[in-house]
Image (cartoon, rainbow, N blue to C red):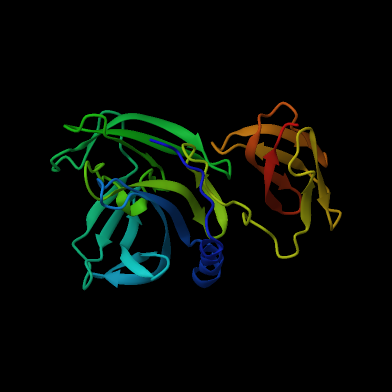
Length: 285
């Protein structure tokens, strides 16, 4: 499968910013790439969707968070979380379907999920990844019993690599579309980028209203300096790759050496009076 680096439209970025204001700092959003695999003469290609958490709703006496697709504000369903499990009610166009278990983050290697399904999911491994906030999250790898080469993985608290509501969807053979999670935000803060695609516009990550911290040069290939307009002392600088790994650190300094890092896109996390994240590009001359 050809992996694509996508540039998202400004309207999608604006939607994330508006959602953060409208629904509070905890509003979640997932960027999805859909890939048509219809056979000719049917259309082929890719499309992008933004799924986001919106208002709360009560279903059968319990509180849920609604999930919409941006654009036409299409209601997808509603979810709730309880004891490391996520429950979901799909919207069928007129009402919510019966609740199903969408994610179980207490699974262990060798456990089955959806064992009543025709193709239950078997946990083949449980490892950990580190998100852009330095938080470790479990990663669950699955295979589908009876479907050769069909796999999926979950990131704890984020969802499936196919998108939050697309968990458990098989790859169709001659119709429909397959889905890929590109990145995940909480409010306007980037939390996770799918390393298979590295495809997310992260220019707006955790910006402050007055832009009090800037970095230069950017792109860089040697030393990057941090300028604080408020002259706040810099306690620490971290450079984080798109797998969430800290690849360079400097303490009590306003510069950091990135000469040993390969070309690519990174995040720079600056610890001062507040913690600020900036996009950093490393380009070798």
